[in-house]
Structure formats: C-alpha cells, structure tokens
Length: 161
Image (tube, rainbow, N blue to C red):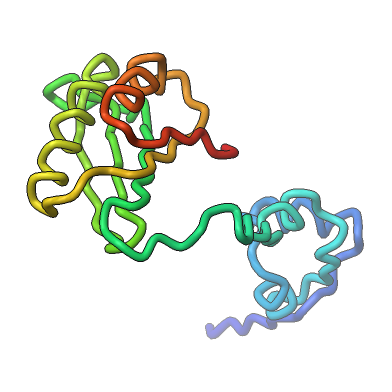
C-alpha cells in the first residue's frame, strides 16, 4: 500500500505570526515569506532593534595620519568560561593610523602593567612617542592611566562608550 501526502501552504494570522518569528530566531522577512508566514517587521521590537543601524560618531576624532598619534584601547571580559590560566579578560590596543592591533589575554589586575609594556614596545619599534590614548569610561581605566599620561606627556581621552 502506497501513501501519498499532500503539502499545503498556510498563511498564519497575526496572533500566530509572533511565535513563529520568535521560534525562527527573528529571521529575515524573506525566509518567513518563503514559509508562508505573513511578516510585519515593524511589529517585533527585537527585529527592529537588531536591524537598526547606529550612525557613527562623525568627526569625533581627527583621522590619525601618523603611527602612535592616536591609540585606542579597550578591555573585554570577563570571558566565560575562563581560560585554563584563569585569565578571563583581554586587552585590545589599536593604532588608528596603521590599524595595528595588539591583543593580550590577562587577569583584571594586570591591565595597567600590560599597557605600560605594550606602550614601551610600540614606542621603541616606531621610534616615536604616543600622542593620544583613547579609552571608554570603563572601571579599569583609572587614575594610573591619568597619572601616566601626565608623566609621559600624552593626552588621555575618555570617549563616549
């Protein structure tokens, strides 16, 4: 005996649409349409938020033309699960002119000493001194960074997060 199955496409009502949108991970409207689910991308807050595009901070910083004119730094973490070495943060240092990126995995308490080492290495390699250091207003960028900037003569800028 051979069975035949019929497949039909059903359009879902608006009350059924939201759960399917959620179940499918807030996928793009074209996928929902392909599945026969009516879409209204303006109905779902998550879809609107995910697809929104934030405008850049135009002209907030002058474009750095030379190496070490402007270096951006940030701390990311804690990373879960922590690494075997129990380091669960990483420090990113980016030279704006060269797009040179340095990343170091470290403990929260090792941020300042590692920055000092990286700064010395970059200045020695480039035979120049740092002019601007830009960070967000994170808790780890404390008075040590301000004090170092005064002692070394570079400008320390805390940018909008």
